[in-house]
Amino acid sequence: MSELLLSTWSFGTIANAASWPVLAAGGTALDAVVAGATAIEDDETVDCVGVGGTPGAEGVVALDACVMTDPNRCGAVADIRHYPNPTAIARRVMEKTIHVMLVGEGAEQFAAREGFQQRTLLTEAARQRWLKWRQEHGPNDPNGYRGWVPPLNVEDAARARGNAGRVGGAPDEIEDRGQAASHDTVSLLARDRAGALAGGCSTSGMAFKVPGRVGDSPIIGHGVYVDQRAGAAAATGNGELIMGVCGSFLVVELMRQGASPRDACTEVLRRIVDRFELLPNHQVAFIAIAPLERGGAWASAALRPGFVHVVSDERGTRVEPPHFVLLET
Ligand code: GLY
Image 1: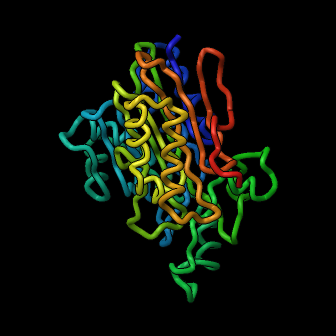
Image 2: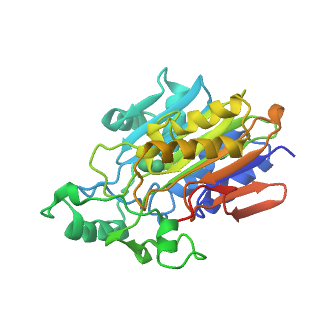
């Protein structure tokens, strides 16, 4: 059986539950990736993707996403403020335009023309997180944006509370450094019955981001990169770190040069450690799959403890720690 599905963080179980039946029924890897991302985007309890995502500094939720199956087949959207399913819109950009990426108003006009339905993205729970942040750290703070530090992602926040076994707690339970914590991405990689690979990424981006900020997730080569000849990789974590090393592209290039998925992911994390002054709450993780004709191995690796991946294959679906963690804390 060649079908394989990987997603990031424990909320990836929501994605895998929607994606695996697509693969098991003989569907394409791309169909599976879009189905999984859409399921998380529609789930209001996930506070960093789609509806229910944490807003930016001005209280507006802005979504980013991309899909990719090969260097000549990719699509992306960024700064989507009125549509809940940016991954499906990104796929439509890939399939229906000569472009790779649409942003902001133009992307929303395209979504409207394609028949996507609008939905309010800001939930009451997310608004409350934003109000709390704004009171304590926002632009009204005398320090303004200078007082801003990236919040922990949901899993790491649980760990910081000494609650490592209970990852992905409810958003209103998650607090750290006086900020509601919400910063991460669902990244998905799939391999279908025919052995084809696909990848996708969806996020509301860094919590309380400066309006207009776009991270790695929708940028081809940063959040996701797929080349049927060399492999597939996807990233999650602090987008600014991932973008500085073209993270997913670099993982795939290292696999092209012969590295295993595990070694390729690890090498890119080492590059990040080498070139950035890390904050204690910086986290990055990669998932990667080699093409079947190169052995078909897969792996995940994380900068710090706290990350988990979700894998589905012929043995079922499992939430697992990564194959490699670079730093001890
Ligand atoms: N990795 C998601 C972001 O930084 O926006």
